Image (tube, rainbow, N blue to C red):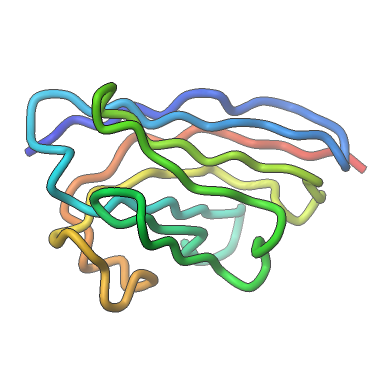
Length: 126
């Protein structure tokens, strides 16, 4: 299995931006789609965004569409989540995950992801 390590979280104010990174090692990265999920305290984990193996297809949750951008650099085996216009309701632990396929058919289905990072905290103050 691939090892995934997230970074880039922190405490910011509403309206600020953050870029999360997900560095992959020890396994295949370039052939698989990647996704970002988040979990706020007391809530279920929810889908945020996904990107196909070559970056050509992206999916977003409605709550982040137009504010977040998912991307990847296969040469660096790293996925990114650019988060702009952050809101307090974006506060959560953010996780990256490797999809079992190259192009996710149902990107929000967490059971279709077989490797997960440990998460990075994002806190947005109002």
